[in-house]
Image (cartoon, rainbow, N blue to C red; front, side, top):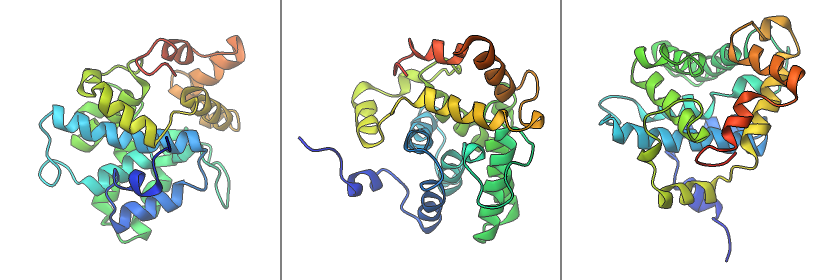
Length: 225
């Protein structure tokens, strides 16, 4: 039995010029594990949208949802020019995503929606009050963690749907890989690791205990890693 082809994987994505450009941006700079997580977050966000009765084209723009989900961890990816800017990874990723979108001709107001969704994706209780795009990015990311980030919609994904997504975009020890990347970014500059923010706490837990509480929790999550 062979795995999914590139055509099979592409069929799950929007296939628009903007979405294709986003994939070309993130694929070379993110690890395969983080890249797959970013894409799965979009696919899970679409399922959360259906559960919440949010309709593409009416309640949210699907291109912007894909852009925000796909680029939500861009802040941990290496930069091609001036290196880390001394900001937590969520904010650096939001800045880079907005710059990219504006450079592609996306209206500033739309780029700002994506900025908010990325910057707030680790902020429960805030993201949910900043519009549909923020809600769906937060839910998509949380669903890909299988429960430990807090979501009311884990059961929005049945086993058959999950198998299709995980076959097309395997997990590849995602939690450890992503925490590694966040911790590495946080360790570069004190401004990247503020106290009581996600990157700062992950860095301090790794330094103190060798494994974070998030990694422990994900071992018993729905997806197991």
